[in-house]
Length: 239
Image (tube, rainbow, N blue to C red; front, side, top):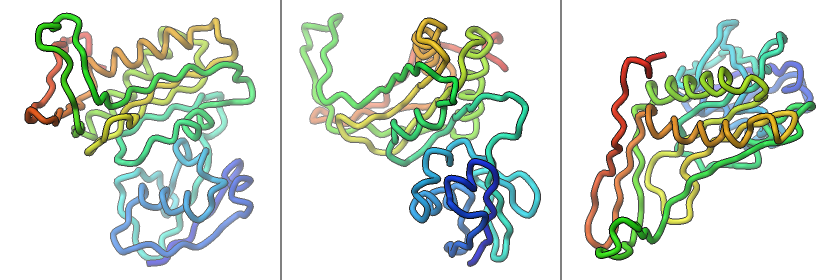
């Protein structure tokens, strides 16, 4: 199918054009469109995670399915002083540079990034008698709609506690992942390093582990097991 794409403001500058046309497979979603644009127009890549999308003059979201002849528009968050916020579950490789670029503003002077990754060997100080154990792969699973909603809640809580934070990215990768692969990213930007970016990023990963429904299966020479957490959400965890 063929769709017409319009670019506005910073998206137009990055694309180097006001509009284009793109061929997509039947049944392609808005998320697939973003991926196709990153390939066709690499200059758009840093802005795509926060770009707003409309289809036939109505806001559209990653899971929405496109149809032949649709008019798609991409543009940044509308004027009004809002800061960039990214929250998503993805099967794609985490592009740390692109995510930091997406939460960097002209006023940004500091960014704190935490990224977790798959450990190949785990040693638990409280279980020395068992000794280290090997992990050959982790498989991550998420309840995606709820997970992304709770990621937004984590970002909202960060902004409430640290009003000086500018951009926030909360991204979790799912699927089978090998040792050394980044699995999760929490990034916060601000004008200065002493305005809460370190504390906000630490809060973000700790809070994600409490309320965002993501699970992992650990696979190794000894077998496989789902790793469960210990935190039980309560009434105060509702948004």
